[in-house]
Amino acid sequence: MEPVLQAIYDSILNGQNKVTPEKVTQALAEGIEPGVILNEGMVVAMAEVGRLFEEGEYYVPEMLIAARAMQSGLAVLKPRLVQANFKPIARVAAGTVKGDLHDIGKNLVCMMLEGASFEIIDLGTDVSPDKFVAAVKEKGANMVCMSALLTTTMPNMKVTVEALKAAGVRDQVKVMIGGAPVTEGYAREIGADGYASDASRAVALAKSLVV
Ligand code: B1M
Image 1 (cartoon, rainbow, N blue to C red):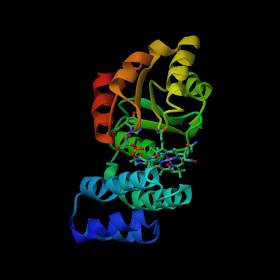
Image 2 (image 1 turned 90 degrees about the vertical axis):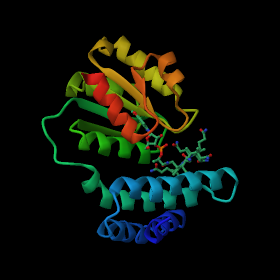
Image 3 (image 1 turned 45 degrees about the horizontal axis):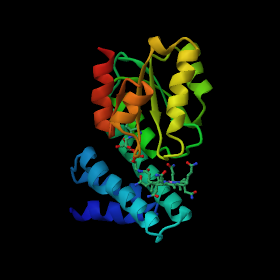
Image 4 (image 1 turned 90 degrees about the horizontal axis):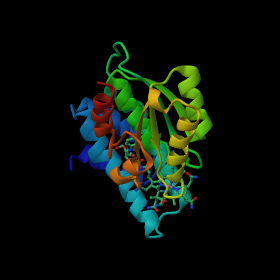
């Protein structure tokens, strides 16, 4: 691994939220592609944080400070991931489902979609089915993107699809889902229009759904 990518990786693992943006800036100055910085320096670090948590070496505070370092690095990377916007391809209501506070993956998906000329209505985290419905009815969203990181909150994706149906707006929108525990099969099971395993696949899927 390039030394600067290793430094980014280490800074996230150690939750050094001042060092991470400095190192991301350095990596960009060294000409490393934003996608490489993201995937080979940052995303792998968060995966390692998850592994350490699973093994009982990290606890919630360590996860939290690692996430803060990740977010501060992403803030530097965002302008490079988001290209100049053209006419929006579609208006996307995006959020992490009810009960779930994980937002790093959802934010990445939003950034990449924004960079691909989608308009984003970012509903944040812990988003109730009613809020998704309201974004469709009141803000004219024609795509709903849901993220879930917990097996316990995944079922709220299904509840949201049901709420869209009950509100009579399911046919007006495309529903896309993702997040670590989510699968293609689950998307089919709950009647979503598609599943993507990462942010770049989410862009490809979103484009294929709107044509
Ligand atoms: Co939490 N956490 N966490 N956590 N956390 C996980 C998810 C966990 C797998 C850790 C572990 O045990 N190994 C585990 C879930 C177990 C399970 O349900 N199976 C877990 C747990 C248990 C918890 C708590 C319950 C811990 C506790 O309190 N005891 C608690 C729950 C809080 C809540 O939400 N109600 C909790 C809390 C937290 C923090 C707040 C400390 C922090 C989140 C901070 C934040 O997001 N602002 C945190 C973190 C950081 C993690 C890990 C370590 C990292 C998640 C992450 O950001 N990954 C995570 C372990 C892991 O995932 N390996 C873990 C990086 C990110 C880029 O990836 O989000 O997967 P990801 O997004 C990807 C793809 O999934 C996809 O694209 C993204 C980019 O490529 N994608 C989509 C995501 N959404 C998409 C939507 C799409 C398409 C693709 O279309 C719409």
